[in-house]
Amino acid sequence: MVTTTSALFAVPESLGMVDMEAVSEAARAATLAQNRAGATRLEAAHVLVEQFARSAQAQAEQADEAGAGSRRPAYARLDPEARARDHLVAACQLTCWHAARLVTAGTQIHRRLPRLRSTVDRGLLPEQLAVDIACRLAEVPDAIVSAVEDEVVARFTDDLDGGDRPTRNAVDSAIDDAVERHDPAAAQDAAAAAAATRSVRFR
Image (cartoon, rainbow, N blue to C red):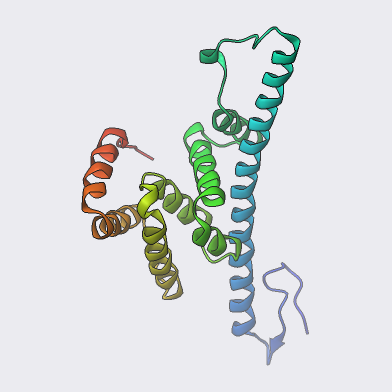
């Protein structure tokens, strides 16, 4: 007999009892699908930035060919990241803060963080955790970002495998520790930059 009340509980019954192994497998599959949907959103944010950048470049080239230059001064033009953020705010009903983080994470993952991208694409990280890691790694210098990325991605995937989901504070601490190990001077610079940009939020 098969129940059909919902997709989750469309599992075989044995002796009048729900097969718990099948339910667990359905839950794992749903989590994987949710994580992969997050990967798609991150890729879409990156693609939006690329498209807006190409559009701006094409418009600038057309204006140059016409001999008129840009019709708007530089200070009045939004950069591709800002345009992508605004698009996501309208299309996905996100706050500006969340949309900006999604854009930052998407561009970082697809341009600068290959190991994190591979992990995200396979559905091994929840979207919010991937965003937290990518946004924090955006502050790490290019010279050491690969080593720091490898260390923290390995650590957090192991944590998730063990049933422990890291908090944003745990992400910050782990990355700070990794930066300090790989480049103490960079750690001091990153701490100063973080202190200048971070603010308290009530959510």
